[in-house]
Amino acid sequence: MELKNVVDTVESGEQDAILKVLQLYNQEKAQCFTFEDDEREERKKMAQLLIEFLERELQPSCQVTCLESIRILSRDKSCLDPFTTREGLQTLARHAGIDYSEELIREVPDLDVILEALKCLCNIVFSSPRAQELTAEARLVVGLTERIKLYNERNLPHEVKFFDLRLLFLLTALRVDIRQQLAQELRGISLMTDTLELTLGVKWLDPHEVATEESPPLPLPRQETERAMEILKVLFNITFDSSKREVDEEDAALYRRLGALLRHCLMISADGEDRTEEFHSHTVNLLGNLPLMCLDVLLTPKVRPGSLEYMGVNMDAVSILLDFLERRLDRGHKLKETLTPVLNLLTESARVHRQTRKFLKAKVLPPLRDVKNRPEVGNLLRNKLVRLMTHIDTDVKHCAAEFLFVLCKESVSRFVKYTGYGNAAGLLAARGLMAGGRAEGEYSEDEDTDTEEYKEAKPNINPVTGRVEEKLPNPMEGMTEEQKEYEAMKLVNMFDKLSRQQVIQPMGMTPGGNLTSLENAVHEMAEERSSSDSDLGLD
Image (cartoon, rainbow, N blue to C red):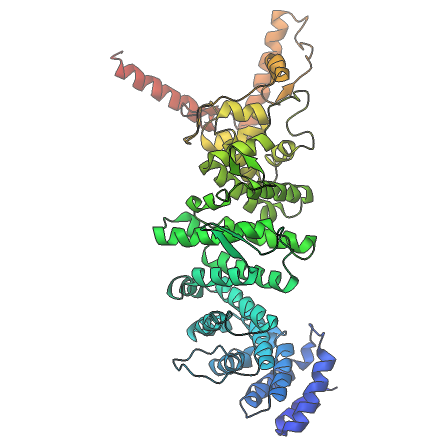
């Protein structure tokens, strides 16, 4: 059907004719996501006419058809202008039932109308910064939260709830002011936690433990999983800075309640392996936002038959996180996005909870037996993580090294023992620990346990590679002293040439253990020696 004919019919204003032509247009363009440039002006005109047509007194079926056409046109980013005005967005918000009004009684639109209007708003808000700004001014987030509060009372269909939550996610992802408004003014963390609890269908066993009626729990149905993931994404947006600030007792109780629900999310599966992985991924991302003091809810559930117990603590959740980490490692896809959240979460959990650290160390860094292969060679979890320590992405490299360093109680000697000095050098240089020692962490003083194999091989282990090396022949064997001196000077001259040409830069270590240029290192050492002599009263 020619677009011009559709526009002419809509312009005529005859409701029955418009309904008929729009139904044909919607059927023809239902799967259309690319548009011809030469029809752009016609589409803009049609968009304006449809917004005006929607203002008339129409039957719900006609409103739905008109909104379907708007949804199709909203896929074209070049034709959004008629929809991104105050009047246009207010019209769509009113049909979605979320326009902000001080009046308590409002006419509730037809559910099919609400659904189509929400889909239109999602498309428009996603694609238009102007629309994002206007929705913030119109306080549409207030209307959304008012409806979400009624989920327990009103029997709304899944699709309406899903697109409510999707729109709320888009608004909080794209607008910092809406994010803050939802978190603070509208008490969004509490609201979304309640909504998550309702969606999961759980009951409280203890103040920090939930469960479903079924034991073992059944997989979360598809629709509930979809809504739960949108809720998790909204919560991620509005708790983004929670782990970086101090929280009072009331907030801590709220975050622990949320943490208990998130632990339950980890413990259950969704409909299918891929959907479970996605569901757990959103859960892990949100757990990483919780204040560190509130992560103890991962360990608080009682040890029950079938639970994984370690040091008298329920380690089911930590074990699932470790399995999740290994699956992400094995996939090797977009490691920065997929791996760093769970690595950071496990690192911080291990840093603040002794039982978690000892459990993870037993799983990731068991007592060394294989000293013939480099630490990065092999298929054990330790090998996979050590390989990441030289990854091309700095964030991935740092997260992997930090995780292993914390498991070693931030002890340089222990860290080098498990990873090799060559792999460890990046983190040690960044932390000013090249000369050895220990970082400022609060850890117990128990010693590392060495196997007989390690004790026997320890004198022959090359600390740089972390393995027993075959003894190489001495390249200077059979040389005279003059020949050795000649070769040594030849090497010095080669380094000098490379240094002058700035191909390499000779480095040294400051008294504090940081790498710096050799010139600076010598200068700092001289200053420290001079300072020490002055303190002793020497001239």
